[in-house]
Amino acid sequence: MAFPIAPMPSQSLSMPVSGAEGAGFGIYVHWPFCQSKCPYCDFNSHVVASVDQSRWASALKRELKTMRVMTGPEPVRSIFFGGGTPSLMQPETVAAVIDEIAALWPLESDLEITLEANPTSVEATHFRGYRAAGVNRLSLGVQSLNDAELRFLGRRHTAAEALAAIALARESFPRLSFDLIYARPGQNAGDWQQELRKALSHAVDHLSLYQLTIEQGTAFARLYEKGAIVLPDDEAAVALYEMTGAICGEHGLNAYEVSNHAKPGAECRHNLIYWRYGDYVGVGPGAHGRVVKNGRRLATATHKAPGLWIESVERKGHGLEVCEEISATAQADELMLMGLRLLEGVSLTRFARLAGFPLAEDRIASAERQGLVRRHDDRLAATAQGRLVLNSLLGLLLS
Image 1 (tube, one colour):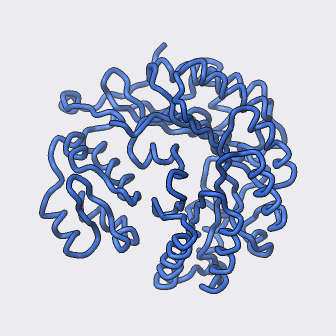
Image 2 (cartoon, rainbow, N blue to C red):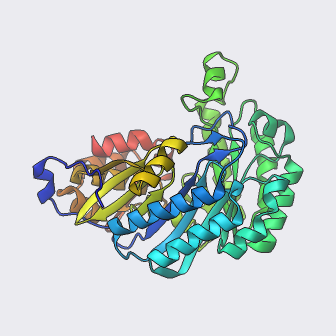
């Protein structure tokens, strides 16, 4: 079975390749379909009237078989159904994909299986079916607990439906997370504090809290360019961010990552694979992966267009558009880019092993003097101040 692997320049092939080093191995399944496109969303999502679920289940299973050839028998720590709107999948489709993964790879005993869901009443009726299929963690796209703000964000549910979905999910899933978007136009500290505390009263063990950002190509981007959307200024956004961390901490949900808060032990295992620079397979339209094949760490990406992807899978067994080796320097940079988002930071020894040289001491010292990082033995972590200016910090450390 051929793969479109693009070789790196010959000198990079002699560099030692480091694998996940305990970060784990996960599988991401992308379901690209939605009932409507949210105005802030730049994910690979497509609005369609209907989907041939049987055909799509077969295609996902076939691409999984191809990826198994690439990865070998890595134990799976996490499966994540993302999108798009995965809660538009029939429970039977989800079960078929999970069963195929279980047939192809060994599974870790505490395997985490997450599915992203919208809290509309129609999709909530599938919750028990997803649990029966093997899903043990639900991630709900609530986004706001204010009806007017939900309409502004283009969401199809109400605040009451969101709370009902949270309650229903708590009956079925041992682990539950939901998302909120803050720093919205006109939102002040008092409004957000009230909404956040209400959310925390319904949270189980994990919250994902994102500041609204304007992404290119979205409906919000067009409104922003016209001046129709005005976001809080930097000072106000920083104040909201700091307040968010403080209030979540009061409720025992610590900020283990820039935008994610959890009780100890309830961190999202799948996303930790990304942030700890582990290995992961990506299947479905527009899915990305990081896998090791024959000692070479590869970046993979599939065709984004659903029609092109499924035709490619049915013809070749995969929808890969990109499959190329990551240079040693790029691996080290990616480790730092992902790892500094985490409270735990990154291993300097691992950085040096990946890059082939240590991170420059003068750069670390400069970042320390500015209060942007802290160093403890082998680990380098961004401070609270550093996490506010991550892009600048990365430029200081890596440029």
